[in-house]
Length: 569
Image (cartoon, rainbow, N blue to C red; front, side, top):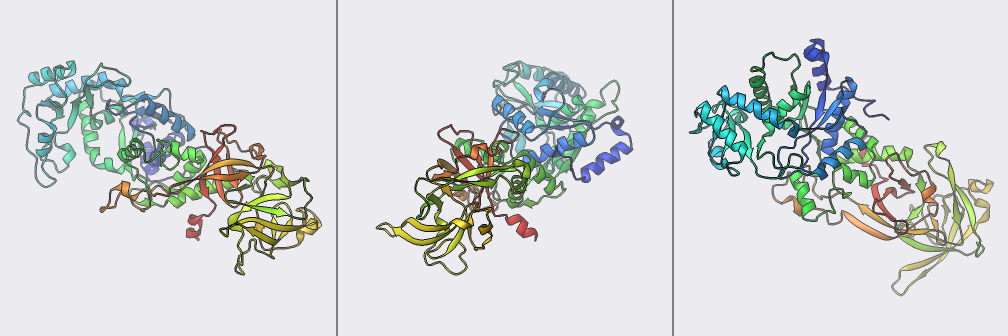
């Protein structure tokens, strides 16, 4: 499936269609995705990526990738590189080269000077704390700064000295002069520039004053010719400021351009059992609650990729949840459903036993090996088949045996017949236990007339088990991942810190997994180079990037059980 070939239209399409019908922006549509390079992208960003790039493709205008790099203390080229990798992995391409707000620092400065000359901006010497205290409340007007009515000449001089580095961090700021009595708190003389003496990942020490997002956002859109600036819902109250800055600058241009950007908001993604705050995700990483940004338990795109999620499944998820104007909580089970649906069609089946118990087939000849044919994926006949070695001693899952089992236990018990998938029907005759009562060996006989594919194979038994030949199987490590949080809404819990809600069992490591020998030959490599499988009856797994030839690590992507599809029924 190509990115957004099956895109569902939504209210944003309606807004854009209306603009096109009125020939706004000369009939052009150009969107942008503007991440801050201060962390790794998460599943919420993936929704925005699919939306913005999907709109760009749908209207044949394309999408810019622009990094909002206006805070050098938190940004790094590591994040820039990871963001580009994630966008590409999701299946999208941006127009031309990536853009950076830092590309526009000189132009933004020049426009700020124009606003000062027009009496629409001033330098304030007060501290951030005092400025905040003067903001008032939504029902009580704010207090004007004593520096609000400085002369244009003094403001120009101070702003130039700010740029030259004559002031320390926090010593003064540039503010827009709008309305301290506005009912919209964001219009009460918002900050435009603050002083930050720090090395910037692209401009080095060329600048020590940096524009605020509310100022840089719309101007960056205008410079690039963006027609529709798609933002999450929390920016709705910022829209009047977005428009004020744009109009204040456009009014001073010799000729007002035909194309001007327009901001449209949509509801961000909220996923249960998950936190989306970049600050909290960074805390999880820095305090070693997880093993990095790409830990498979993280909701980051890189974490989902390492866990075995496919770009197709994430695009499908974004399409399924749709675009709304109101906030809601999405069940993580839907995301899991999307990856199951995708891997069910594309992942090869292999036999692996996670918790093995030894089975000896007493009437099978010692030293003999018989090769059994197994289909790689019943959903895709083009994937063909493979052969599995069958021998006298095999492993089955310990949970597939129960002594004195109840009637509806359709697996193995003493005296009960079961089918070994793609092999024979066997019957348990006896068991052996150690001094602690733990079963160490199961003794069975097989019916040689019931080999899979032969006439006798039509004999019916109620249980079918997967297995591996002990002699031929390979031992691997399996990391089983569960949800990172125990609480359905870790961000909303008022009684506990979100760290107290971490799931202590979110990762369990299994070192006793034995897998069939030919699993690497089962057409397992996907387009992104990741090898993904369905372990029969157990779930979907992928090979971790830290694996070595003689030390293979599997990550469990998701279990076979699909709670979402059951809910829909």
